[in-house]
Length: 598
Image 1 (tube, one colour):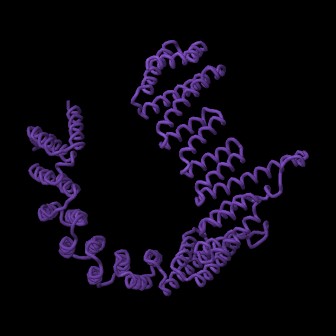
Image 2 (image 1 turned 180 degrees about the horizontal axis):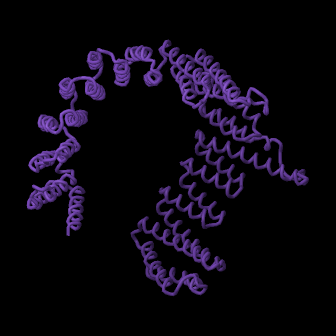
Image 3 (image 1 turned 30 degrees about the vertical axis):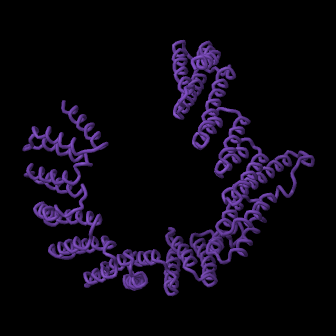
């Protein structure tokens, strides 16, 4: 192995000598490079190979290349690149070849190889890398697309890109993304040829001898791809994606029209088709170019007409396809238009009216999903239509009796309406819902009670909630209860609640930290109480929370009535209880704290 390493170092000597001779590196730097290179060579030549060693080797060489570039720029010397940079690039490519042969399945390694070649290698060399990668990873469409895009955009070879797409489709005959990108590539190729032809014609050059077939210029190859792909990949979504790509190219109007007509003919039963057709009305200009409305009011009226045409399509759609999905598209459109900012009162009112009407019709047909009931109620509440909001909320809870969200919305409306029977409605909700789902409602009830009822009533709600809510959900409730106690009755009340709950597992660390914080906010902060809280917290979390132990030690050190002599005992207790990483973190934090006090 030593002979191989020596031979490879000797291969480097000509480039290193050049670096020193032209003044890019000093003699000491060259010696350092040889030493580092020897170490890196040793690592990739030994019997047990590790990927990290190859990556480190490559990274070192790339850093060296970049340093050479910077120094060339600084001294203004641009010669001898064949002897220096090209030699390094070839060496790095060799290392990449070895690594990618050893770890064939590592896509990230291949991509690093590609990135390196894009920056430092020649285009034919990168083509070979893509070929080698695709021979192994032919099952990954994204890599085929990457290679084809590079051939098209960097090598300017549409023929090579086309061949790659055709090969990729043999492996992945039902991959939508491949067809989309191949379709895009052929349209780009046609656009490029059209521009070339225009440039020649502008220069009054004879294009008769050049190969510009009319079919290609009009996007016939893209049309063939479109026809083949939609016969294999069904569904409006894919169809619309091809139409969206075609619309990026101004010359492809005939193709756009054909795809649009086919979409309407083939996918009438898909809500996406109707949604697309309706939204397209926003883009259609009703007046000739140059005759657009001049005033704000006229523009608002024109936009209103476009939106009316959209809604006319949606109205036809929900008759032809009366499904929840179709109504969802219609309502989403109405909401999107409604949320668009406008200074026109006319547009705002029209959009609101239209949105409310769409919600109501879908509701009457029982085709409104739960989340859209919530959107409807939010909209009504936003405009203070409390009576209508309550009607919708009642209807929503009737349709979705086991939905916490719907009951929350209904109760929110009742609270906003200042209903006198709130408690009764909360109790009604609990009858219909599973106990494990009710935590948000208990919290809402307690928050409402805090703002409107006596302290005793709110506490009674918290106590009832703790009997009903079990498991991890009760942790949140206990934290809320403790917070409320401190807000409403101060530290004395909070301590009483803490005492009543201190054996009621489960807890969160936050529960104990709250009571510790409340104690520290008192003028006469008692160390005895802090010790009690820390000890209680450590019974629950002492085996996993290193911060609790550290804070306990700091308290003994910093509190006027603390006992620094207790810190050693707390430290050893912590070391016994903490496990694994928690113990390591504790030792590190303790050491840093001690160093800070020296």
